[in-house]
Length: 115
Length: 109
Image 1 (cartoon, rainbow over the protein chains, first blue to last red):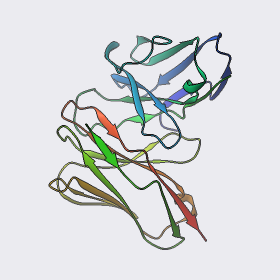
Image 2 (cartoon, each protein chain N blue to C red):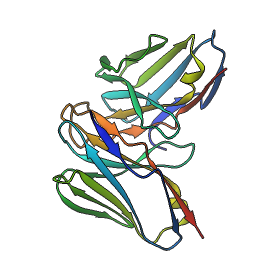
Image 3 (cartoon, chains in turn red, yellow):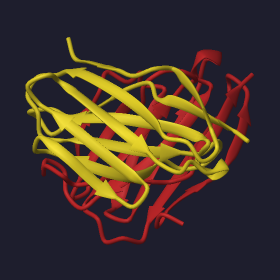
């Protein structure tokens, strides 16, 4: 148990569906992240929120839309995805963004399959 | 560009010692992290090095040489539960984590 909870754990969706991934952290952290993890590839940072404000969007397609209503919750809204978007989506949090040595705590991820 | 290299897969025997290497080329350096990730689970923090030298934490140790752009994770007295992927990540000058693709470690009895 890392203190970061993601739901659902598994999701299968069609290319025309709309779904949302949810992340919640109970650590009192100020920064939250969405990562994409594909097999045998490095973790890809998608979005960063610091104190509820989006600070980074790493050229992510608009079919992925993040939302951070408060510092404990983070959502990733999905619509009209492509099969190549199938991957493990990881949420993480850290005490602050922009501080050396600050370790990130990860959720167990949502295994997304787009059919 | 920024790059982290680590072996894709390694195999070792229970009770033995294994060293997982990581080399990096990044824009600036604010520390190097090692994470462990069991299949289907969250990556979990193992170690952080920002100064040269060896950091020991139980059966696991991590070494850093900033001049060589090199780190290794040393696992001693290997146990079957150590079978996992080990991720190397470097924090660059913008405090962004640059990740390696991970090393899958297989432990055999």
